[in-house]
Length: 312
Image (cartoon, rainbow, N blue to C red; front, side, top):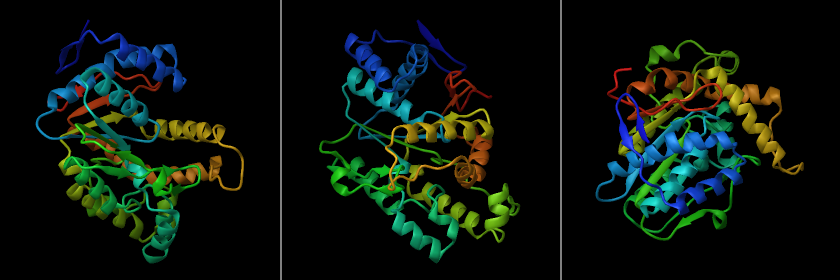
């Protein structure tokens, strides 16, 4: 059955039984409902085709933007599976989150620049040198180790537990909550957007620093992407609700011990405010420049795939 949208008309391939079986197995491992098959068929398969059609010589770098709880990790896992299984290409997939500075490094950053930088999240709390090195190494077709960040303990795992890509890579899927997020101008940074900024960043030092670092991310990372796709939440209120569900899942999967850093509802509310400024700005402006936009409904279903030239 053809998949149609404002811009794209894609006739689905006859996907192999092996690929379909692997998708079903991944659904089961992720405890996804049967209804999720519609997203796989109508969104993930066509999106995989669009990515492959972009492929030329050398590794293809795909940047995926999506606020917290929009399903970046799920989408990435399925796209990786489909491309590897159906198109026989080698895929490296990782998150901006895995490049957070260590807890100790962020504590030092909090002393040197601003206390709010102890909390992971905004641009400036990632090791951009490490990200740049990983991307450069993969794009050059060399063996590469990619860090892994454990959110439950709020720290990076030991290098012995990092992901290792021994062979040259055909497609790199790099997802993150602020990937390709537009930079704000100085006027837009004047007024606080929430209680956190009003009380804990009254002089605007933290938000100006994060904005400057976001601009650096664009220059050193995002501009090298061959394609940018955005998972677009309905609004910021849904982002908060979905992030709360993430924390509940994280908590249910951890043994209660003194090592965990699972947040209470009050802590989570404050934590989300660190992301609010950039998230709201991204929801408004990134759809204007992203190559592909995937609008997400309140029930987490996806409306379709919209291209930048659709005149929405």
